[in-house]
Amino acid sequence: MNSIQGNPKQGLTGATIGFFIGFAAVALFGPTAQRIKDSLELTPLMVAFLVAVPSLSGSLLRIPFSAWVDITGGRKPFLVLLGLSIAGMGGLTGLILWSYPDRLSSSLYPWMLVLGALSGCGIATFSVGASQVSYWHPQRRQGSALGIYAGLGNLAPGIFTLLLPLALSTLGLEGSYMAWFLLLVTGTFLYYRLGRKSWYFQYREQGHPPAQAYELARRAGQEIFPASSLKDSLFFSARVWRTWALVGIYFTTFGGFVALTAWLPTYYSAYLNTSVLAAGAFTGLYSIATSVFRVMGGGLADRLGGETTTAAALLVIIAGAALMSFSQTLGMSLSAELLLALGMGVGNAAVFKLVPQAVPRAVGGVSGWVGGLGAFGGFLIPPLLGVAVQSQGLQGYASGFFLFVVLAAVSLVLTLLLKQSFTAHSAAIEEKPAS
Image (tube, rainbow, N blue to C red; front, side, top):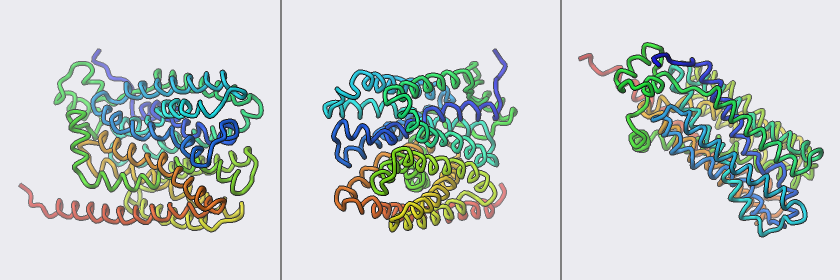
């Protein structure tokens, strides 16, 4: 009973597997949107809400569930979120099996929204796993560890966006969602077997009082520890302005990533008139490239600093979004897409390098606010892009990308303010006389 299990490598592996399978829900409707749109006779704005709705629950639930990590260590909230996602995916699969194609009508649209939101609960595992990984690793390794965790986990939407069009052609819509449901169940079981919480939480579970668990975990190598309660974690971090600056930046980098993963299949098929299979491939390229760049961005942030890396990433996003706003050709759009992937991937890693630095006493709470409200961009941005299409017609697919120029510019200002704050704080510590 007094032994502890796992190590930082195992903690990272388990969390990455769980997040990978839960985060796939970002691509839940995007690759199949055209078939559903035709069957339900949806408007562009209704399609935008449908592809975005998994991100609604997937973003908002990050806040309380991430803070819950500061109480339990992460394993329990992780399993609850994956269980809710299984319920939603099972319901959606059953609905499609029962109704598609002859009985799938507009009256079922609200049910698809509800089940999509429930399926999206798995997306919220991100901030749970990010907090879990943070507690396993020392400060000097935060960027690299979180870059690996989020980068590999972020591969899921791209892979599923690539596979779904292929599955549609072989298994049909019903078989595709059934296969997805079975993969989700399998991934949840793997997390159940492999997921580990850090040493402090294991000692607490064994009955050690907080001070003793802290000392034992510190001797084992743990450097970052939680606030005393769920309420403390959320409310303490909410009172620190740096938390909200990071929320704004992450809204652009990660919310933008989620939004584009859901929106790009529609963009390519409707604006550039590509096939559904090609649109899925181009979107998969974007999503996978962003994930690979995120892994690289973690190491870059460890070497150059989170603030410098974030600022450079935002400048790249501005360039990519501006190019996309004027694009009328496939080649230009693909070039702009890769710039956006580079900026968002590196930026996502750099932001979470800054989380323990911004509020070290409440990593779970900050991760919840940043991961939750930041990821809310994945729900809010696609309808805004849909409004551009509805008001401007086909050209709105291109001009809507100017929204990312504005978001990245605002985020750049927030990054510079953070850099100034960290510099001033370091200077104050150096000047403080020894007691």
